[in-house]
Length: 474
Image: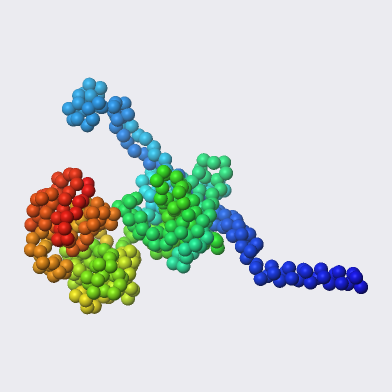
């Protein structure tokens, strides 16, 4: 009888324990499941991550390495040295680059960053199993910073491409890279773990004026030098991004890494494989986000939209009737909340396609149709030639159209139509719509006056505007 009671108590105790465990299954299971997922990702997707080493030969004048001219670049003394010692021949130097890539096709197609292979004369790919292959550049695109290389191999392990549009902040991710596969005895890739820290991050033009880094994934998974081109992977083993850069003040890892969303890559992979040029849609405008003051000025109850600061001549926007001061609220039936969204949507739109655009003009909705053009190769040059910029300011003539748009009463000066974020003008507090009438006590009556004064201006500048004086630092 006592034994029956004893075993009954044990049964009850075990039943209660199991019940409590069932009610809190994540308490002990979650860390184990994450660990198992990372191990699984390393063992599966990791097999498709390769090391990429590049060589680029440059020619350098020998004299630069034999003489330290005490007279700098003075032409007279440089000629004296060359006449006396003779002009030394050019010497060739090999620059070595390292990066990573991910196999996306069993026939040997590898996705990586454009900047990893951009100027390479020779590309060597090392697989995780130690095999080395000569890589062939099939296609590259500087704006997206993506490229495809091909190796002569078959039946390779392939990484599965996921959906970056469904990413969430706080989601676990694994960054995989293989920067030293060619040099180490163990060529297997390295993995680091973290979370999605932020989405839709922009690096502006801090890294390169050619590249479009305005819609990046930010992660705290360590992305160290040489890991560029490797995949950012979710716990299912799906590639959700291509690691591109780290933000660092010392050159080392500081908890901030960035990756290109894989959906951006999927849109152009086929064209890169075929070696075709990647085309981007273009309107031919400069745009800016709306501040609360600007939104109130234009009679809007919110800050959604992109304000047209300038329309270029003979551009698709001008032909469609878009005007400076218009606010684009919808493009191709898609809501536009800010400049980043407009740039992304326009860039992805097929060149030559006609789309509907809804703008706010004089506090009324206007429906327009625009035929999207092809983004010029030298668009930065075109923008600079059609506007006058100085210390982050873009100004235009104070004509009747500008006076109406900004509700100005001033009769002379130039009107500010754009202020570059974080520029010295922005820090001084100048905003679009300000009228500049003086710079360092010198009158500004026209664009010609403004250009003459600012052309060779050095040091701090005292600028008089319709709102008072501002000091723009050099």
